Image (cartoon, rainbow, N blue to C red; front, side, top):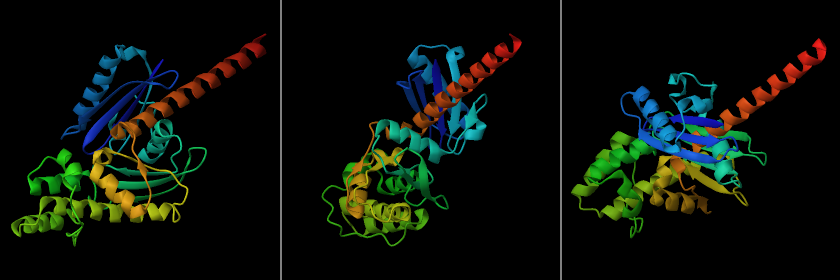
Length: 279
């Protein structure tokens, strides 16, 4: 048995394939691009080929993310909040609060002891503090977005951004460069600004963080500078899974497995009842 989870975001399409025991078999992260249909098919093909299985061997697929309704042949389309909560509990079981910063939105999710979502707060009104925001800042600094995580080392907090609007912040970074502000200070200021904004979301779902385990998922979780800044802002350590991009897709795959097994069990019981009546 094999189960596929697809997380279609604004920047990437993530796919995770698990087996009947719920163990990870393969995963793929591909750029979404202008046509998410092509990205979906590529991600699906890559995980199937990496696993060495045939498409016909897939028992069920669940899709999540903003493009979840664009996927054909799914068992269900499930919100990313539910899928990220399920996925993070699989890879980091003790997580109480999950921070997910994706390409175009940010979320803070409070999870109870049973792994269910208790409450959540979400910023989906603008791209401030998201992957799109960091891409714009990297362009202004003429560096790769993957380089930002290490560029803030040595920054002493001398630069504070006055705006988190992507357009205004980019202009502000350009002005800082013209004023010969040091790159580590600029990047440090960017990361602290993201941490302040994200910390506000976290406080909306858990006012007191004492004794709570906080984890982070999404592509921005690969940025170690954001992790450091958010840890300092919240006054606690933040855990990060090995593959933070795939947490939502993993949760979708696990939900696909659960629902398929539940349906099969229900069907088996129904057939047994029909056989009893017939006899």
